[in-house]
Length: 424
Figure 1 (cartoon, rainbow, N blue to C red):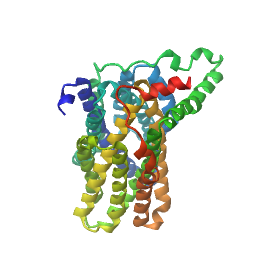
Figure 2: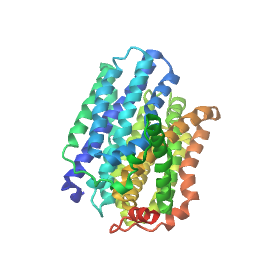
Figure 3: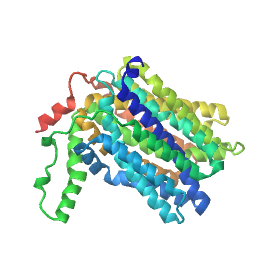
Figure 4: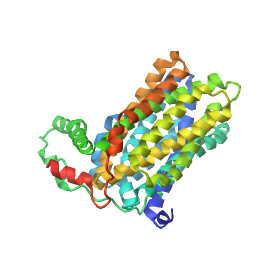
């Protein structure tokens, strides 16, 4: 990517995403181990992880509004610094409720950081280079999924506190890398909900905030997405995909335990296979730029679904890991296409708000998928794998007309801006 090497904002954002994600993957290993080792409860470990997602699910919309009104760079840096302060305290917590409270605090930092970093994509990725630029950014987020768990495995014998301290150090580096990033264009005053229109009183302010979170922003984003059939289909399939991903969070360790009980750590090897595939897929995604992106998006979802469907039929480690490498690669290609299409179809000033609404809903679908897999474990791994395949590939096939008929967005215009003007 010769062009992206001269783009310092893109490289800074990519390195920031890389270091932040690298630390997060190690905490993802350390936090459930901490709860399991100290309190011996898988249910409490699941609850703790769910609590970490809760702030983003509940307050993602209002956070997006704050990002729109402020400087995304400050929110992105503040989210990273907040995580760096909270995460090291996990090992020092004495009671389970303290661990869970810190998990919620970590989730708050995450909730502020995600839409802010998404918004910074608009200034880091130049017009006309959406596919290549987003391919680099997705790879920067996917490569740590391979490296992080491996590093965590090396550090675990030295104590879980070292994992959390390492995460904090990477978060600090991620914040420093954002210094000097250019600011996205501010949201015009006409596009903001006027605070002056709010009636006086604390209760009235809460009511206005809730209305803005769950009514105004949702209605505006719904109108925005439904004006673009292609974007509407991709948004819907992102929800079903995350539901399937939630199912896989329980399916994969069950599969490793039941099929490869003689191989300690097989769950880690399978996860590393997905991480390896995702890393390769992020780098290779730019090769698909000459094809119709709707067809690419549909195809990679279908192939990934087939990979999950085949997994329970495999009883040897090598082909099982190989299939998951393919699944991870196609997932990364689909993610690159998704980000590139969103950026090219939405006005720059709407990107942060779109992702602020999308990410909490995706997190909610992820949690629902985990719960559904827990309720369906009695049906066996083949049934869970079939359900994963259906919810990943099925919507892409059923909504194929919307993907295949979607016209490419012209880089010379901002369709979302035209939609907003039309609505006014």
